[in-house]
Length: 264
Image (cartoon, rainbow, N blue to C red):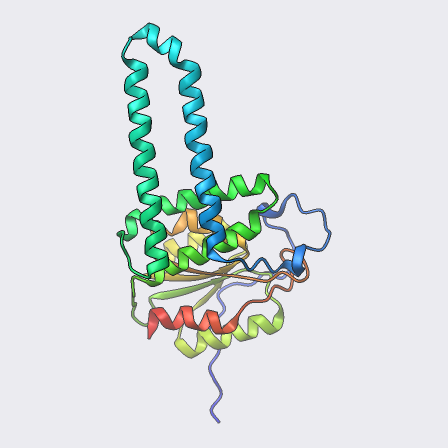
């Protein structure tokens, strides 16, 4: 049987330097052996809470400032309250359309109003709220699933050599070999991104038309926020049985599905 070609590995770095998203890690084993698999519904629940908190904070500030604003102009508070109500109505209508898009499997919003637009900000803010309650990684896992579901609805295809596979430095050797085998099968170059800045740099230099990225939940949400608005991305999160930034594992079948979705 013919040997499956291995992909070109553009860069590798094998030491265990924690990414900045893990600065607060205390060295103890991660919950559930670093497996944060969560249902997409978890993101929608926490994102709804984020909208409530965000609009509530603005409403409280407006309530406290209303007397002073009324002194400047008597109709100013009324105009601002009306504006807040309008913004709130639009935000909830957009959230509802996003929810229906995902649950129905139909793209009800253009990508610039969904996974490559305001969704990226909602995902980042929701992550911050969940972090306050110690649920960040679980919620981010759910958020990435929702993002991927929305992105897959577009049915985007790219030509050979136009897809780039970004992976972290912390994959186990067996996992890395599997990744290179899949990438070689489809002729996709692989770049090991030791830092987010280098990932953005290689995207600028190689100018791919789409990216499949592998990262932990924290780096994935941060990377999608920075990159997905500029170029289509599919993201695969990892399991961290040895803690962050070492011997990470991933679902090879899912990775191949993501790659094949773009190039076949």
